[in-house]
Image (tube, rainbow, N blue to C red; front, side, top):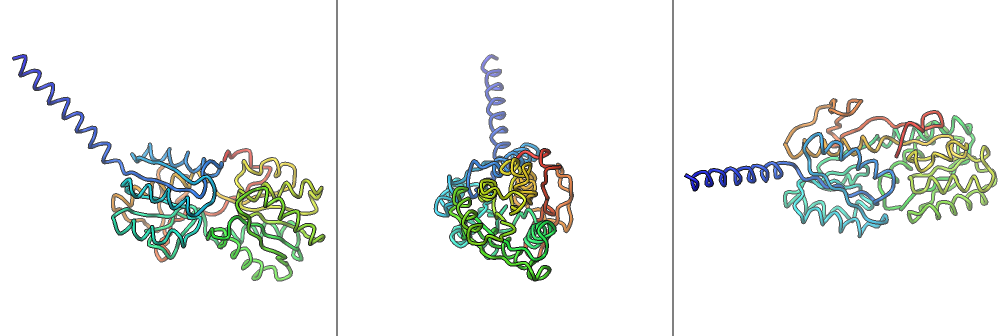
Length: 328
């Protein structure tokens, strides 16, 4: 009798362990490779992604390179693929260097999506986009020129020249200026090595070369603080306006001081959340609809099938009136 009871208990324990293993295996494994780890923007993406992972039953991991280096990012990406993750999402530093790896990953059965930045000519399944390039470009240009006037001289300072999304935003700004503000002159476009210090130096040089400069646009959260600090140190607050695609935490003091009257971005926590939700939909073979209400997100998201883009929504404009409501 004791042996019989022990056998039943042993079988129950074994079945319970097997059920737990099966449950763990049922959770899709999703990895995200940002352009760089540790900066507030990607920390916020991770918080949103973790919230979605808990809600939707996803095993989520995020790991990125210590600098915006394409080779280092490729190694992290390949590590997720080699470990058998169901979905690997990536924000490409250099889309061209990732294309062969994305193709190989898809061929072996790993779903690859892009999020935050795209590799549109690659084998990626779809792109989880924060906002359309043309909308981002138009928002920065319109908000800036409303403050400078339509005969402004503007310098642009961006991060690494290999980051396609940043190049797209620059092109969108220039197109908006060409279409709507023909008297505006973009005097220079420069790319940094991904450091705030170099952005500071480029902004200082731009003000020296162009004493009548009206504005400087920073095309990344890495460049925004350097650009705004350069204007502050030159004692040109109110004379040279700065703006860009900047997370609130990186420019809060500059927005409050007036060195940067506004910045444009989106909520990266929502972007991380949408990336995890979309990854699970992909693993489960579910189709997207043209407009969808995602549980946990305030506004509907849009699906653009002709471009294979899942769109979070329109850009956000941060000013001294609303910036304290955001923490990223």
